[in-house]
Image (cartoon, rainbow, N blue to C red; front, side, top):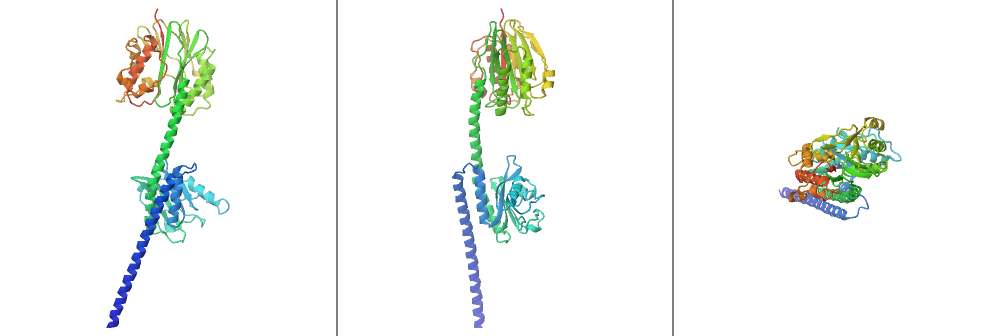
Length: 501
């Protein structure tokens, strides 16, 4: 019986030894994983602070993350699909090794040879995955990892003729930050030709989760840097644009002109201008570019330059607008146009000749308070070819009687919105114009606190009475109506007053 006893003791000791050995291996594996993750986080954190030599920091970090991920699970190739700004599309932002184009396959698979590697990488980068579609899109949409040990038998994995592109095993893990999936980290084929296992998946997911925090803030910092640069550019553009508005308003005996402009954004698409045509005629124009921001400001500057080049010496407002359209129509974007009104004022007779290119009709307001919109046919600049524009444009003539007002405005004035989503409207404009022009011209404290009051621009003569007082009152009432509500269109007004007597 002793031999049985010793056999049992030996087997038990062997079992304990094997258990301890297995436990030690598991402990060593966990320690190794811990060390890998620690080193990975340390290296990625250092990369976050390093100079990227002109490469966007997000791309730089993604390459570093992919390098460590590939080394950690001993993968032959890998890629990171990152979300595009639309939030639904994912594209390759980092690739390593001979990574096959798994998002869309390869209908025209390149043949191995010179340029094969570059061609495959280009195919992978050119393809996109949509959330919920394909293995990349499913991982992105669901936010859960995917391990396919035998990819050759899985119908979800694309097939390739070239043995260099064939996928034996594949790992996909979401790069998650809080409740957002930033992208999908993908690796294919272990270098020892063994399939990936659950331990590889767990380790890769841990690395991806750690990296996602750093990448999220790198992306956030990039957006902040871009905004700072854009803000600086906008401030410079704003100063340039303000320099383009007239600093002095022409006056004539018996007549007074005043104006203001309030941009809806840092820089706007509205402008007004005055030009001396000859000793007896003054040109007045007001325009509204459909695009706002930098694009609208650039087009506004071009339009103003062309206007300044053609208006002096020309007594036909229609001819000037036709010249502007001929120059601009060939280069303007299809979704942009310019509404423009140009008037020529005879300072001796108070006669006005006008041409209107799709702009809101000006108002002729008599001394008795009757407001009449003046019609002049025409289509906006840039919408049609030169021949059609010329055929549609017509001139009109009006004469200001003593006490009359001539009011030009952009639709941002009448379409200004308040907090209740109500428009100011043409009726309020007419009422403000007809109000007592000699009333207190200083803005109320409420209006002065308005963000739009602080943003308003344009020379407004300070003296009370006539056009200057009317413009001041209209601006006050308009800005008080809008309050601090962000407007979607610039607001510009020009008023001509013929004094009585």
